[in-house]
Image 1 (spheres, rainbow, N blue to C red):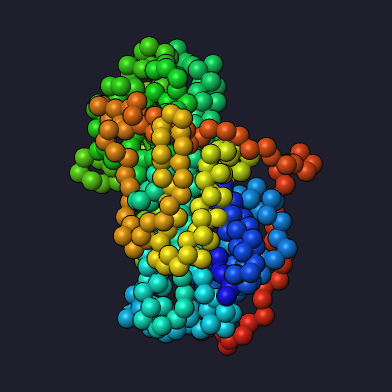
Image 2 (image 1 turned 180 degrees about the vertical axis):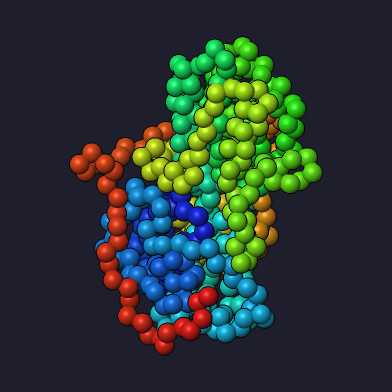
Length: 414
């Protein structure tokens, strides 16, 4: 029986470590698992029958490469009743290539795919075990203590804020200055919260953190900025891209696509403009955007270990017949921080978003609480050595050919 691995959704600095964990564990079970295949661009690759054989891939280099080595995609799998031909195609590809295990590496939406394909396989009496491998920089998957990819993004952002804070403090203006960093976070503020780890005492950046979980209060915010500048000469602020006003309206949004998906961005710039118009401070604004999830040069060792572990355990769950499960991280203790990986029901957590608990946010809604700091701190611990060539990180770029197709081309990949 063959195993198929696929990547889905936004990629991370350690998603390929999960891929390496899957492939390594599957290779070790050569007597029970035949070929280890990978789909090009996730479920779209399955539909197109674009599959790689992972034999011969250097797993050390794969694990050290950020981004999705096999290609990812954002594809919402519809209900089977709505598009039965699409499911027919997926299972035709599975059958043509002898696939009896699917390991899908994605976020909370991807766990819905696991549930749908698992249910379809049972209806068809097709021998398939579906297991979810979690990842997301947003850290918003229910059922897992944290999500692989988040710890490294958190480490990069906290480092960036600490370094920017040193710069801004050096150049603080007598008239007052403001630095704003906008981070990812459509509905959840985990990445914004992580930047607060940069500050070891109240005078260090970031002085204020704006969460999507807390309605933005303009008057209270300006008052706090003014107080910080009066004390230090400058103020550093982290803004999650999805912050909302008290009426629920987004602080800033951009275009909507044909499916109604809102492209966020510009909340940090809006905050800068607000402070300039209200207080007249000199200001700078930065948005790390893809940098925060692609920083393979500054990976959290804990995050990398967890990414490898969920891949390895996902294979164990598949071999044990744990269909419809996800390999979830479980926190065993705070100090020392210990954890393991267990299987949880994927359908039960699909499409849910775990928001930052109110207990992790300060009473005024504009900083991380001590409870939040205790939760986050272990996730960014440890550094991973970076192999370089000509002064730059050495990344693996796949050059292996796709497998020969067994089926006619699929007509509808819209």
